[in-house]
Image 1 (cartoon, rainbow, N blue to C red):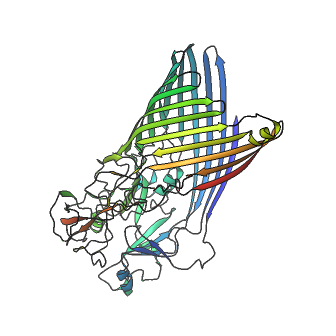
Image 2 (tube, rainbow, N blue to C red):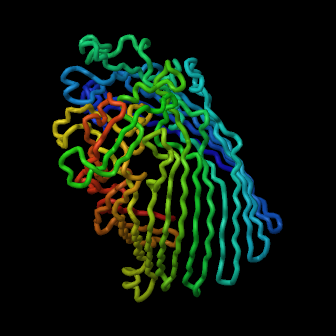
Length: 604
């Protein structure tokens, strides 16, 4: 039986080093900037969590039975002011100079969001020894969370419900068979149900348009009126926020399902003498109902018109050019603003948390473990794997979930070498004192690079090849979720139409780690251990290349008189190759510069 209690306070506050009311500037990845006071400060998250569990083991004949349950009750109170003091958004500095802001955001409503989530789980397992050389494992688990129903929104009732799921049986089956005295075959299959992160729930229901929740009031610049006749007028805030429509309503999609994974494995372990073991196996997993990394706008109508992309050859200095032609729907961000109303013409964006994603992981692996001598052991392991995702797990176009490609976690090749050497007491007293109880260890990894997606340069669209003085409108092409406040697309500023999903891979990651330890025995049951570890011992530059991070992922510059102009229904864009595409820019913090770590451990 176990009982636990947790208390956690997380406070976000201005540093105090500057005036908290000073204006801040937030640069946008799509171009332009936000101007106002820092959002979400001060903020406070307070969490209380109780947990109780009980497990019963019962051995009867050839059966080893296990039964148990877990109960968890978590209460979280979030205080988040959001954009309470208002934020102006500008596309360009020229717009700022004339006072022509693109949009104004101000949070209104209750900034306090309380949430209580009970969790219940129970399980049963039987380890059945059928014969001396055959053991079977049977198990089943049932667990679920009970999220509260969001506050009702009379304007859109779907935003006031959450689809709790209670039928979540997760069976598991495994076996171990000793075919010969030196050969063991193991395998299994199971269903593993995931739990919904409370952050996803809060983000999707805290701005669902209900009067009891926080909402974002949006005001767009009226180009038929001068800057001093706008509501609000820069740098003022809205005085009557109740008269301004919310910029969006966020919700959990009625068809949302909590993710789960089907997993299977098979391994053959062969002993090769008393000190050497070879293992060869395969693992397969299939992720179902994976949560999309992008909000899905339920109210967005399919876009009319098309965008024709012409891929220019490298070294192009003038357009028009000739080359491969690609025709896609027109996803001009400005034109999409007028496409709301698929469900309710009186509402704007209905940003829903959805779970359409699918994932396949397949791997083959082999490992060789050998105890070379007394105190010296080594391990070599190699894995070849493919991790493929599809059906809207990562998308930049909510009307096309057919894209299929490597997962951002995909690494085709992984080779690991590990070894440890421990000295034993030997020799005369002085030698014994100096050379005994040392441990030297290393882990060396050679891993192929992770994938990233090719993107378009959407900082501006221009009719010339000069991007120094862009006189076109700052837009985002091929990106239907640009202005969704619940999160922009996972694929950055707009995926290149000439490349597949995550179709490029970064450089290999190579890391050599070394550890040295010495144990000093004070008494029979007392000992001090001094440890020193070096990570990435040879200080190799390992670039973190994943989904555009750490690499110049801009593959093409879209150019054309109508390209992303915010007016033309059928647009034409010439894609001029970017000379700097694929160049490395930043080193990974996880596998970055050499790191030293020291520790002292006392055992008694």
